[in-house]
Length: 518
Image (tube, rainbow, N blue to C red; front, side):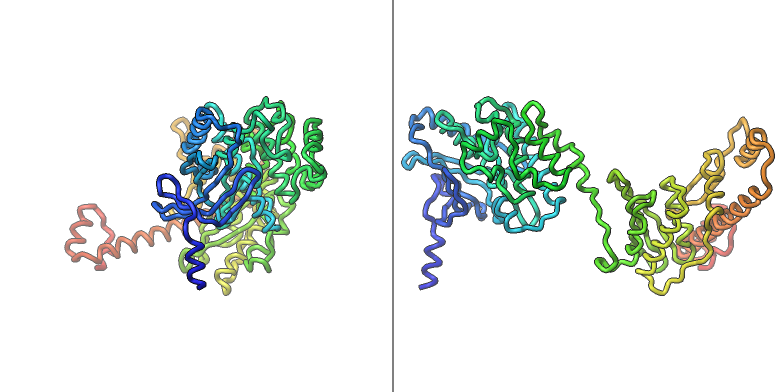
């Protein structure tokens, strides 16, 4: 018996004229002039929405019906990621209904979804807003522009699994406008712009409605909930009185953005202009400080100490490449919300956190010693999270020592910053010009002597000491690189007989006999 009931429920109660779409009796949604049913596309094997609208009795002439059908049929050409897909439509002359087949969103409309999920971050609301505005830009860019006329959260649908938002009911708005505009104002009073009542409007009525949608999403209130009927709403709207719920928006940025949308028509921004608004542009740059307890990353526990730093919000993350190498990423957010990511390889055998921190600060053109120290500590913590038994080197440059060497290397007339193939930095002297073959140090020394008088021996000794240290490290890295290359060549030559290797090396005029280890 139960099986029979289930089978009967799945039977089509109506089929479209082509026989492709079948309608079930299950109602997905209702409106003042429409009902939406669950339906099935037998050709593609997918569920769809069957929108059925009762036409006005006044619209009975064949000429009116054909004109209406042509208008709705044009909507099939609208194809955009933020617009509900429109498959087909037809008029049922016998029952005086027009039927539209569209894609179906199982999560329902945005109003239902927002009521179901009370805790939605502002970042998600901004993402939804961008999708809606992108859809409006597409509609409004047509010639002539496509105006929705009845945009509201009930007509915006969402795919909850992917956060995908789409504008719907475009066909219904066109139908109702054509069928009833001679007898009544079409739209939802709470979302209608003042000029819409005057029947003299443009695409900006959709922007006004979008602003009211955002207001509802933020406050959980229908706009003008304080009014008891449409007449009161009309009086307030045409008088320029904003909804009472607008005062409940605590976030000044959100409120300002909504006010831009619902401003009087002469001051209202277009969808394209709103997409360029800083309120929406910066939403991807939002970063939150997370405590160590929340994410378990040791490298995060020092972030809150950097809130007043010149670097702004800063984090260090690492990804282990091999036994001895970890790729570090320095993520820095400035006061304007702009983000920079700086990547550095870290070798646990040859590098120190302080030396890498110096390179990072060099890359960012900063000279704050506290930033260097903080970054070094963050690097130590991040390395420890990957290699718990790693012991940081104590041979760090600190305080005035770093400042002196930084000033030396800040001048474009001294050393040039280069990189090894691995990505690591090293300092090298730029090639001398033909007109002056003196080294950069000689040129620099000459200029200092002529312009600043005697130079302190102590300052020179400090610089010499640091230079010796850097150049020594550079030589070590070069030697290590050479050893790596020799090892690679040696491994390659082992694959061939010794006599062939020897002949090949002779031809290349390579005389290093230690290659012939094969």
